[in-house]
Image (spheres, rainbow, N blue to C red):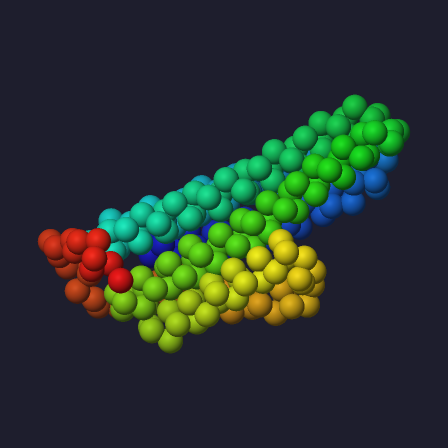
Length: 229
């Protein structure tokens, strides 16, 4: 139940953050305007709660998964922490733009606008490397594999998670290598399976709970590193 609620919370806070951040996505207009600071700050608060929810999703299942996947369970926690690191860098970048905005007094000085554009560019790249790549490794490949092998969720959904993770990783690298455009049609389509997979991680445990599995039995011996795969 807690796992599912936390996953749904990641949806709520991430979507709210994107909507609230909209003014700062246009640095020149934002820097020349007189408002929007509070809205961006609220977006930052939402993403702080997103970080908390992200870490929580890993910590609540770590004691269960480590009984069977000692290395991979730690890898999932690490991937979540890395994703949150990129999110935190993005938060700081946007708040720095707000600080620059307060210096303009409604007059968009050229150098400050350029600084704001640079900070927004930094945030955009954190999104590419965090939600656009690390999520594919952690939520898709690692968590999908552990769910598949443990049987805690339907294996069809777990396979979807594996496919989704692979697509996220490939398109994320494609953006870095400038093979595909950031936020373009290809990347948008590739994120659909991940969206469905993560939504199922929120809804299924709340509605059905985890399926019966030997991994849920207390005292299950922890295998060696060689048994992880």
